[in-house]
Image (tube, rainbow, N blue to C red):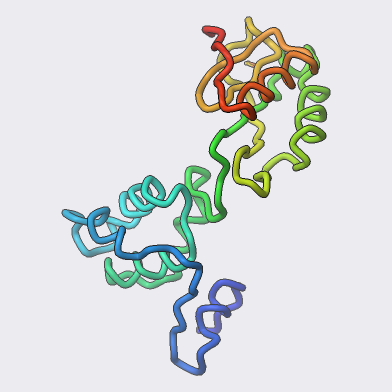
Length: 185
Ligand code: FES
């Protein structure tokens, strides 16, 4: 079956029938422990990906290939699962994940302006990670803390009743190596 996917093409570059493993520098020896105890079959794809992501912080291509080999599952199945579920990330993520709520209450409270200020300060767009891997900026539909709108979450901590200046002050604290005090939802 022809493989149209760019990843598939890269893996096939070595020549007809020859699978060339992507070399992205991931230490594949770390997978050995992570996959221990998992049955070698398709049922283990999701737990294997979850464990691998815990180890690497994301899922490098070489890790996907190794998981496919280890579980004796076609690479396309592993890649398909990794790209289907939002919980899996195929690109490196930042040390601090910044979630901006775009739900109704937060939108009314100025979420768009907050997102714009964050994009400008961090120099990235929604869905991207800063080159120094410090921050990843994402949006969500509702953080379940509407009474605090507008709300962002940084590294699992909630910050509410924000405006642009307060938001940037929170980010500055993380940039300086401190976590700003959390506001309980
Ligand atoms: S709408 Fe933002 S927390 Fe619910």
